[in-house]
Image 1 (cartoon, helix red, strand yellow):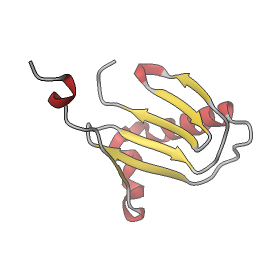
Image 2 (cartoon, rainbow, N blue to C red):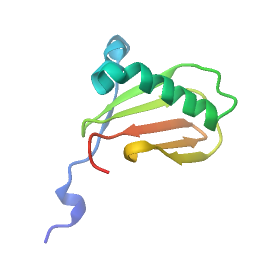
Image 3 (tube, rainbow, N blue to C red):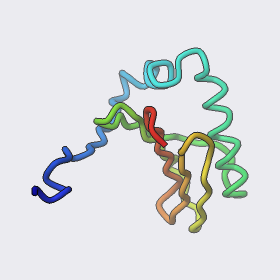
Image 4 (cartoon, rainbow, N blue to C red):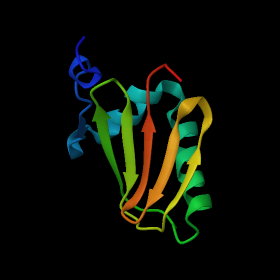
Length: 103
């Protein structure tokens, strides 16, 4: 029997280059991109009252999901979202993982 960690490929996040940022949200969220964008920013403002907007880092994840993180710094908080998404606020910013399917 092989160890579990040898059976699964590594999950890798790749930073989206500046020239590809405009296609990032439509590619992952389609026609719901504005709703998702508004929800993400509003949730971060709820979790971190000092947030007033700013630059977000986008990454594509090798399993088909995506990764969003603002450049804003906040203290440690976490919250589970709908459909298995998880938002974690750490000292280096909020991280939102969005997977494709699964729980």
